Structures are given as structure tokens and as C-alpha cells.
Length: 242
Image 1 (cartoon, rainbow, N blue to C red):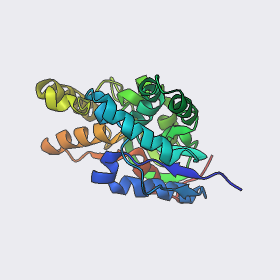
Image 2: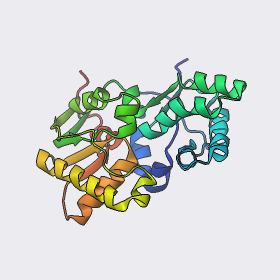
Image 3: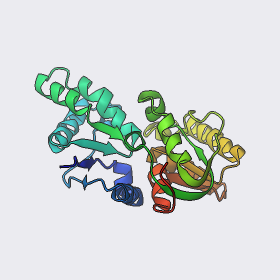
Image 4: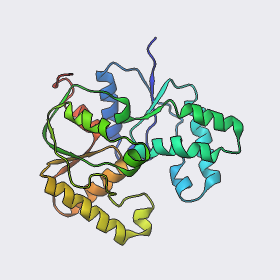
């Protein structure tokens, strides 16, 4: 019996960009991978953890462990959430031996979406540049996997922007607490995208993409911003699998 992929859907995607979730489903269906989506899943606890509310974060993390404890493989379309689970769950449960062991075990079964995939036969016509989100690139060390996926998309040309791993200024609560710094950072990011000559900006974390897309829109730019799942799902069946 083939192992199932259990999807953990990030809050931002569930609330603001459900089409990205559908794109993931389309990709897994194309690859003939069985998918499970637990209806009782909630937040991983990262917003509470980052705000210093450890008790509330532990409650959310405990619920996550309960929901996903029997999953073969867990896939999440957010490097930020995966980073939270892999790196901060053991910290949250350092005084709880049972949950500590469960969190360490589940860390071996959770993957960010692009990390999990190898290649997908897909097609997309355009110049694509890639933004390295902080938690994904610096926290999880995932840099090359998304680029490999983009290179495998028929018709897409990957063009690197300068300082691709420089923060876009979102940072969750950071953009609210420090709006002037956040605005300066996102300005630098969109100028790098514009200078690359790309017509499409792609990333793996929706928080970053919402921030970048919002600034490009206010500038009147026609550059399209996409989650990598949308890029891969865009032309499924049109490309060739190497």
C-alpha cells in the first residue's frame, strides 16, 4: 500500500489564497500521490510563539502532534511553518518528555512542499525569478530544490535576482511593528525583481509573496507573483518529465 501524503495547510493560504492549496492537490493528483487533509488541523503555533505566548503556542503544538501523529508523510507549503515545527517544538516541550519525543519523531516526517518534490512535468511561458524566504533558505537550508523545480517547468526560464535571499520585510508582526523598515526592505526586493527582467516572481512562503505582490500592485507593475505550487500546477500535462 502506497504511503499517503498528509497536507498541513498554512493559515495564510487557508484564509487568503486557497487556490494555492488547490494547486498542490493538482500536482499530487498528477503524480498519483494519495493525499489526506485532516479537517481538524489548526495553526502550528508560530504567531503565538513569536509574540512570546509560550503557553498558547504549546496548546497549538500539542494539537498539531495529536492531529498528525499517524501520518506517513506531512507536507506543508510554507517553510516558515516547517521551521517552527522542526526547530521550536523541541524547545516548547523541553520539560515534557512524552511530547518532546513525539515532536522529535514528527520532525523526521514533515517536509516543505518544494523540498518533498523532485520534479513535475509542467509548462509555463515566461521569465521567472525566485525569492528565497528567510525561514526556508536560512532556517531549513532549502535553496536549490525550488530552483530545480522551476528549471523542470517547460517554457520557463529562471533568471536570478540580486540578493535573492534578502528579507522582503514582511516577517509577520515585524511589518506592523516596524513599518518604515519593512517598507524599505520590500522596496529593495521589488526593485531587484524589476531589475532581473522577469515577468513572474515565485516563492514558497505566502507571507513574503503577499507583501511583494502588494508593493508591486501599488507601483502599478504587471509582474505576476505566484506560489511555486501554482507555477507547477499551471501547465500540468504539457511538460515532459526528465
